[in-house]
Structure formats: structure tokens, C-alpha cells
Length: 384
Ligand SMILES: Cc1ncc(COP(=O)(O)O)c(C=O)c1O
Image (cartoon, rainbow, N blue to C red):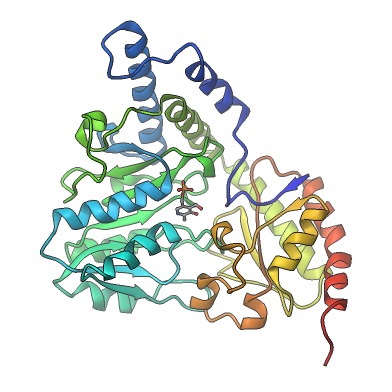
């Protein structure tokens, strides 16, 4: 099987799996218990917190473990609004993941005003529009993603954060698709809150973190026990937290080596060039110069992405149409729509996302098989 759907999820790294195993078995203590079994778990959780802080360049006290990217995003948004009850406007972009879009949409019913900043055809944020809207004194929060899950396009987080800081607006970034792909040094960035999710960088599913810088106006979302220093109640998911820590340690090491990113980028470019050369009526969506190294989003003009995915799946090739969460719907993705990609191209957009486990053979196999599969689909299109 050839797996090119790593923005949906990644394979757990064998090292991560090995690190987790004891915590699924004999090491079952509750980190809040005072006895030895509990204290072993406490140490494991704190070691993982250290690894996450090291990967993201922040202080350990800023790391709050969550059940994944979705909880981190919801907590950042709702936690900020709870701390700033007098402000009713939230600024975001038109291309956010549903983990940000949906909680924001739900807030409209409670009287919140959501401003979506547009992007251009290459997927970049309209900075002039952002600056205009930040001047509104009613803004409670700015939430803009770091890297787009569908196109891989990277926003200029430093410049966006500087604008927000200039207007004293708290800034949250969903870095779920950036962590493990671009270096992150939170301490020196004008970012107040940042979300990550382990399963996007070879860790387990159902675990992530929200980083909240000191002095950020923010309140907890999940209240319960005193875990996470009263910032997220609930007994810690120790095996998953250990997995996140191990994945963060690996990712920090990988990302610091230029060979690692160059290797993935080279394979991605080989795949992209190969497909564009071998299959007619194809084009790349999103700024090719400012993308995470593992992602390419390619339109097969005139086709439906769903049909391509199903046929590729029958041939043991796993890819995705835009966001995995929106597969099953025949609507083109909101991201490509926001970029004003023509309907005939947006409907046939397929996301190929690679990982460290992708091989040259995988890439060449896809390039070899794709032309005949695509022409088979095109031959089935009604003519005229
Ligand atoms: C950009 C982005 N944000 C948030 C999420 C949600 O993360 P999780 O699956 O950990 O809830 C995803 C996952 O697809 C994502 O790509």
C-alpha cells in the first residue's frame, strides 16, 4: 500500500509505540496518586511536557495537554472569550480547519460577530484587510492557522502576530499542520496561544496540546480536578501523553536536520513534477514557494476528486480530497473556494501528503500508475 495521506494522519513511529507500551500495561498509576506507581506516571507526564516545550520553544508551564487539535482550538477560542466577556468580535481567515470554523460559527447564535479575512489565489492572507479589522476595539481574539491542511500554504505568522500585538488582540494559531514540518520557536514569536496534535507527526491519536503564554487573558474550558494546574480537568491520558512526548522529541530532532526536510521536499517535488508532466489538464493549488514540505494539492480538471480517490484506493494508493473530514460531501472545499479556484478544478482537487516513511519507489509508482487511471476516468465523462 502507498500511503500519501499524512495530513489526515500519520503512522505511529515504532519508537513512539515502544515508549507508550509500558504505560498501557503495568505502569497504570494515576499521576495524581502519591504512591510510587502514581509518581512514576507523574514523572512520565512531566517528561513529555518538557519534550513538547523543547520542540515548540516555550516554557514547560505553558503546555496544557488536551485530547487533540480540536480540543486545543476550542479551548483557545472559548477560553479567551470567557476571559474577555465585554468583546464580541472574533477575527479569523476564510480557510481555517473545521476545528476552528465550527466553534466560531456556533458563537454567532450567542451574539458574536465573526470576521473572516480573505485569501488571494495563492492562498495568502489579505494583510491590509486584517490590519483594518484589528483596529476595531471590540475584537476579542484573532485565530489564524499556521499551515493549511489542504494546500500546505504557510501563513506569515510573525507578521500576523505583530499586527495583533500592535492592537493588543490575543492571537491564537492552529499549528496542527505546522508542528513537525516547520521550526517553531514560540518564545520569540508574537503568538499567545498555539494548538498541536500528536497524530500529525507520528504520535498517537486523541492527544495534543494547547500552549498558552503567561499573561494571556484566558480561562479553562474543561473544569474538574486540579490536573494541568487547574487548566484542564480530567485524569491525564498517560500513554498518549508519553506518545506525544516521544513524537515531539523525534520531530524536534528531525526538523533540526536540513537533510530531513530536503528529502521530503525533494520527493514531493518529484511527485508533483511527475504528475504534471504525465497527466494533462493538471495544476497545483496554493503558493508553491510557501508550503509545508510534504504537501501538494493537484487539480485534475473536469474530474470529481471522489472518483479519483476511490479508483486510487482500489489500486492501493491512499490520498485525500482536501480535508479528510469533508470527504463524503460533493461540495468543493471551502479552502479552494476561498482561493477562487475555478469549479472544474476545485471539484477535481486531490491532496497528496508525504511523510518520512514515503519512499522514492512509492512516488514513482504513483507517477507510473496515475496517467492510465486518470485517462480511464476521463474516458467515462459524458462528451459534449
Ligand atoms: C489544521 C488542523 N486543525 C485541527 C485539526 C484537528 O486535530 P485533531 O484531529 O487532533 O482533533 C486538524 C486535523 O485534521 C487539522 O488539520
